[in-house]
Image (cartoon, rainbow, N blue to C red; front, side, top):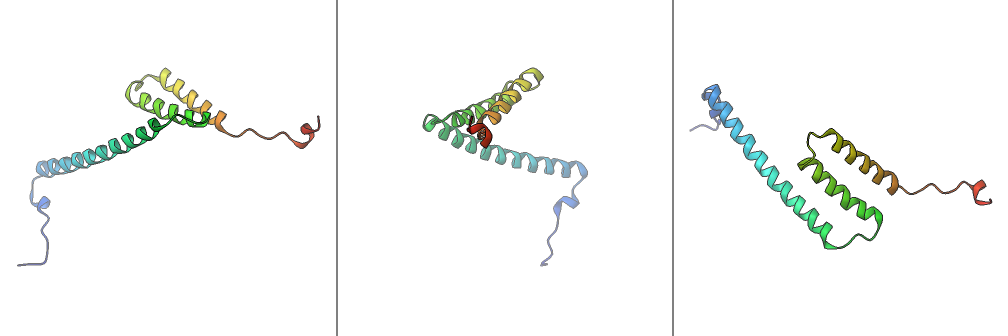
Length: 108
């Protein structure tokens, strides 16, 4: 008996090593996808739980929905991708608090 472990991958041919690594990667991706699906389901439950109470909250819901659309349907369509990007930029711009009026303008 020995305390030294043996790396069995070193004793396999290159093809077998590649196949083993591919199986490991596929398994890891499947685990990550399952975790992602669970996370998306939780986000969607939260988004559906109650109506938005403000425009920024409504924009966040729309942002999430546009993200899903961009990933699933609009892939490869540069025009749709640009429209989505413009809408998201509008959400960002319109959600920022507006600058207060300078002191000189308040007296007018």
